[in-house]
Each structure stands twice: as structure tokens, then as C-alpha cells.
Image (cartoon, rainbow, N blue to C red; front, side):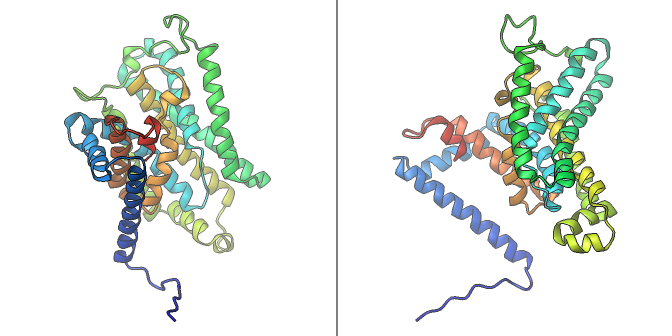
Amino acid sequence: MLKLRVSDRIDILPRHSLLSLVGSLAAGLIAISFIFLFSGVNPLYAIAKIFSGSFGSLFGFKETVTKAIPLILIGGGLAVAFRAKFWNIGAESQLLMGAIFGTWVGLNWGPHLPWPVIVPLMFLAGFVGGALWGLIPAILKIKFSINEIISTLMLNYICNEFMKLLIVGPWRGKTKHGFPYTDDLPLSATLSVLPGSRIHYATLLVAVATVILLGIAIYKTRFGYEVRVIGENPDAARYSGIDFFRTTLIIMVISGGMAGLAGVGEAAGIHHYLSYPESISSGYGYTAIIVAWLAKLNPLLRYPFRPFLCRYSRGGRCHPDFPGIAGGNRANI
């Protein structure tokens, strides 16, 4: 009788990690194929349509890049938190809080300040908004031992309702004819886009720069060493004198702040006003979790995986001709 024994590898080589990743993606495609098959759709046709929807046309490619921008920022911040085993599931609300802070600055100061001044102020305000929202679960965990998964998830719902309160209440735009939106941001407070696309290149440049700096910080600085030690061996971290409280606060300032930057990009680069939370963020805070794990929590390796998920999301929306599959499920697949 054949007996199988499963044991951990002593040494994990790069090729082992690559094979594991490729195998996981292949298993996912097989599972998706069965879903399409049971829904009466030719799997090869469906998958080809999804890929062509993102990279089969110039429009699809531009939209893929647009969707990747917030994932670059959020995924970089989540990588820091996850490396320290702080399970931040609240990037969605941190993005929204950044959008709220950035929009307030744009609406109130934008008419009086030029573009080179107001745009950096909006990004700074967005970072502060996301960071402050991220500090709440950090303090709750350290001071009161409240599980960060629960607290960050609950804060998502709280921020959603808070944003709705603003747009139907004190922030409802006078020029929106009673609809639940804020007034449009002044021209000086909006982000320029590449011609013929929705790619707000200022946010893209910020995203690329911050993630590169974050990769350097994680692997080349004392702070990065502390983050990695806390995640890999908390007892060793305590023995070496690492300040858990200070380091955890910094981690969540970075993680929440980067999500807040993404919120400013969405509000000022795509919508130009605040509306319902579901419009400002298409679930980026949750999608970025998947991207982070696919890239093994390496900030620089996330670049190929963000477009990978974006093309499925974008491709599912570009091709709605899959009979038997509801519209929302196409994007989820």
C-alpha cells in the first residue's frame, strides 16, 4: 500500500517558490474554467475574452493601468503590515478616509492656491487621513489586545457610513441639484491624466516612488529589520529590545497613509468629487490583499501581479457577453 508523508522543506529554493506560485495560478484558472463550464460558457472563450478585454486593445490596456495605480499604493502599505503579522484588513476605509481629507483640502483651499501647491497638500492630507484611521486598530491591539482583523473590518463599515453622512448632509454640493455628491473640485485641485485615458500620472509617479523607497526601507534599514523580526520571531524581537508600540504605530502610519494616498488619487484624478464609497473604491482595499500575498510580501515583486489581477477585473467588465453568469460575478471570477 502506497504511503505518503508530507514534511516541510528545510531549504526553499527560488525555483520552489516559483513552481508553487505557477501551480497556484494554474489551479485557480482550472477552478475558474469549471465555473464557466457549469454556467454553460466555453472556458477557453471566456478566459480569452478576459485577457483581450485588458490587453487586446489600447483602451483596455489604459484601463488596466488606471486600476493598477491604487493597488500599487495599497499593496505596498499592506506588505509592511503583513510582514510584521499585523493583519490590516481595513485598507478600504483608509483609502476612503484619505479621499475625505484630500477632498476637504481641495474644496476649501483649491480655489485660492495654484496646482503646484494644492496637489501636494491634498496628497499630504490624504496620507494623514489614512494614517490616523490606521492608528486606531494599532492602539486598540497594543493597549487593549483587540484583534486587528475585527477592528479593521469594523472600521470599514464605520467609514462607509461616515462618508455617506457627509455627502447627504453637510458636504452635499450646492451645484449637484440635490444629488448626494460634493461640489466638483476646482480645476487647480484635479489631477491631470494622460491624453485619451484616465491614467492620473501624478498618482502613478507617487506610487512607483513610494513603493521603491518602501522596498529599500524593508530590506536596507533598521526599521525594516525590526518589522521583519517582529513578524518572524516576536520573542526574539522582545529579547532584542525592539519597541513594539513605536514600531507598530509606524507600521500602521505607513500602511494607512499609503491607502490614503490612493484615495486622493481616485477622488482628484478619476471622480473630481466625493460620492458613494462604492464609487470611490472598487474594492481596492481587499484586492490588494491578494496581490500582496501573490508577490510574497515583496513590494517590488508586486508590479507584475497588480496588472495580473487588474486585467481580470477589467476584462470581466469589458466583455459582458457571458450568458448565465451575473454581471458582478464576472468581475469576481
